[in-house]
Image: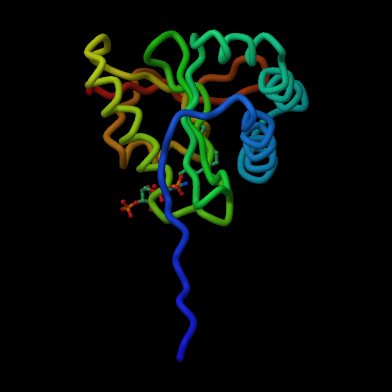
Length: 161
Ligand SMILES: CC(C)(COP(=O)(O)OP(=O)(O)OC[C@H]1O[C@@H](n2cnc3c(N)ncnc32)[C@H](O)[C@@H]1OP(=O)(O)O)[C@@H](O)C(=O)NCCC(=O)NCCS
């Protein structure tokens, strides 16, 4: 008789405080692999300070900075966060899970939630150079050309819910 192997389930839900460290470690790992080469040393340092800043964690604890994570079973495999109600701040998927629909699932979860809450009519993002085509596939449109600020290169974009 062959053994029963259950595939671990994938799902998205709000991040729990005890998962913050695991999420930011994944973000930093993926950032180094897919984004850091495009930025100056200043940009890389600024990004590191942003994700390790106690203030960001406090804002998350207060519900001002909202974070949602994708899991496979208990393993955190991606995350999306928003600030100012409708601005995507971080969207990162573990490298081993790229091109498996996790980024799209995180985007859908966020957009469905914002529509259900009824306060926002659009979302914005500063896309990394690496993610520009991904966001275009998700229906985002550029609102300006590529910019460089504090060593970080990004394209401002918008998506109507
Ligand atoms: C961008 C990112 C979140 C996409 O996550 P993902 O789980 O691989 O994306 P999905 O599998 O849901 O892809 C959805 C669609 O976008 C496409 N896509 C994904 N990444 C892409 C990329 N880098 N370039 C072009 N297309 C891409 C997929 O092929 C898929 O297309 P399809 O619907 O025609 O099959 C992920 O590559 C990542 O973490 N990148 C590094 C961090 C980053 O740049 N984040 C954005 C910060 S603003």
